[in-house]
Length: 522
Image (tube, one colour):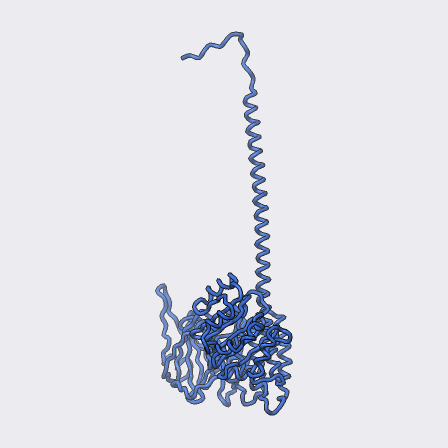
């Protein structure tokens, strides 16, 4: 057994002796005597835990405020990046972290003493993790720290992750506090947003640099006092609005002006948890597919219905059937037909797509009757002078609302009175609040990144099509040239054959005897 201290000397990387041959391998995964002799630690393990996680899952950072657990961690299948944070008061390495990659092939184990926060992210398609603990699980004392805590500044090696996007977190881990909540002025509440964007769009430097400039300006604004004593400071509210879905990349990558709003759609589904989604006026598919992507990810048994004015585009129908056929359907319907198909109080999230608001507004009481007690209405083209502005003005007079100004404007209106806490936090801002503009800037930058990503893929696809077309032309030219060459060779062979026949027929004639030749013998 080999023992190697990491950057925090009390965290040990242990390599057991493995005996292998053509049959496989054998090893002692734990031997109390050998462990004590190699590490100098006289400890007793009381509990074994086994977890299985898919790629991209990040668990942590977890610890117990009382009954702290020492952990001996190993991977039975797959690979993880394991992280330990020293939170022992008075420790010389307090607040520092150490990490190691653990995989089943190397059989290594990591020892974390009691008093450490622990987390890991799964790098392989899945991973089985087994760890022994020195104390029992105590749910009343369980605590967590945000994985992307800017004060700890853990290097999760995001640039080496084999997927694009932020990690998958449990609800508890996503809402975990930062390690410096007792002094919020020492942390940048914008850091998780900037980090998430960097993870997704690290290959789009122009977008990222623009975002970083905006983030720097936003950080200065966060330090400003609140506009009034009745307003909650931005540095308290902004982190509570940060959800992992806002950093997703849309799967449907057809170019569309609505892509700039897709992060809002992702965020809203995660925040409001609607069971039934209805989109009126489905057109190019960016909004419809964005909402469906989020519904599939966040809702256990979702229902999505999209109504189109004309026949749905064939490509969009095929995409919907291929990706979301179990819970989503597109249908052509008049406004009366759509109303007839929807039961009263059944719609939790209603999206009024571009070009539809002016037709919906005269019949709004009928549509409002279809909304549930927790319904949210999203209105596209709600900016100044846009077709949806009038309907938005009508609703915002009586309901909490928020307007995202990017693109042609996207309004979010809480028509139902029973809203989630996260949605309520968003709608608590008015335009005079310092955080109102920061929120718009965050989602505008994220939307710009989605648009740039789609344009990049469209440009790459266009270039590929051009290359394929050029290859086809070149192929045709080569075939024609080859055909002409073969024709020339054929003509040359025919000419040579004809010339040979002529030479054989032109030999010297026998001399004439003046009499008829005798007949051949019979």
